[in-house]
Image (cartoon, rainbow, N blue to C red; front, side, top):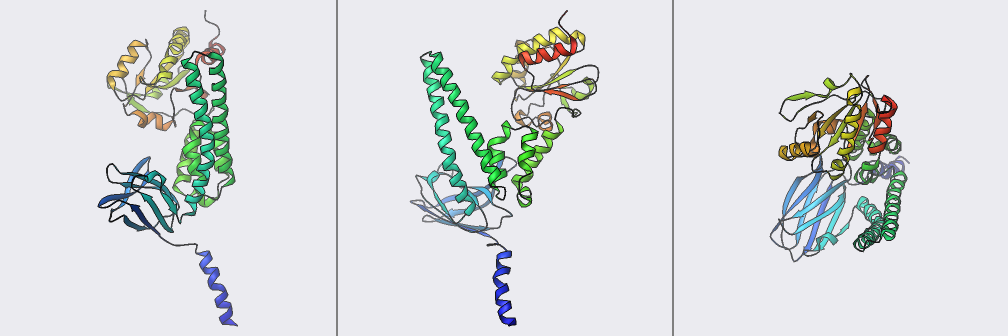
Length: 368
């Protein structure tokens, strides 16, 4: 009887321990020989190399261990191409021809199978978006305003449907690493704190503990710190002369608009005349603007300041999207701004054009 009990327990132990404890990736790339191949994964937004091998008569292999399924990449030589796939601790096969690497067949990874199924459905939305974009382009070329409006509406509708599909997929797969991965990849630019917080809380604990879950939570925390009603976050960056300036030195005397922009940003440059107008109207009443540039070229930054008649304080570390102030405020798109009151609290976000003027009228009254 004891022997029978022991035999029954063995399968349960095996199940509790999960599947394989390592991955074995084997490749078969037809007509490829003597080509180096790198196994890479993303870290802090950059592809980093985990391992390397050589393709010998089409064959190569990698072995390792992952804490959770991850998007990985096989990079073949300098000009041969790449294969992206979800890897996990399993026996994974990669089969392709050297001239069609993007169409490689991946087997053995259940996460990748689910990802491919997701991508197939996503492509149907992408085709609708592309068709609407093509229709808009044609209408614009023929100066057909009615057709342009129709195509624009179709484009927006298809884009919203696409985001809705991705959101629903994440909500229905809360036990899968794909939920935070896809949310971060496709939805973050459109999400404010309440929506991100809502979807993040549905994820299983094991999913929250993955690198994708942690990255999503980091973004969630950043957005939470910059919600309306929260105190401003201080930072220090060089001004146009290279002198370090702290944002806190410009907070407390009146309302200040913290404006993130760049010389290369078309929407930012088109918004600058509205800021100039607001500054001229309300600066004498206590309104200030504090600009943070995402530029890389100081020359371009200074030229834009002069051309757009910007007279308010400006700072930048010339680090492009790695701008330190932008990181603190979670900026993913520009122009972006935060209106901060005398007490240092954020009272509004992303006010532009008439919305900004209306808010300043509420604060300061009509222009005298």
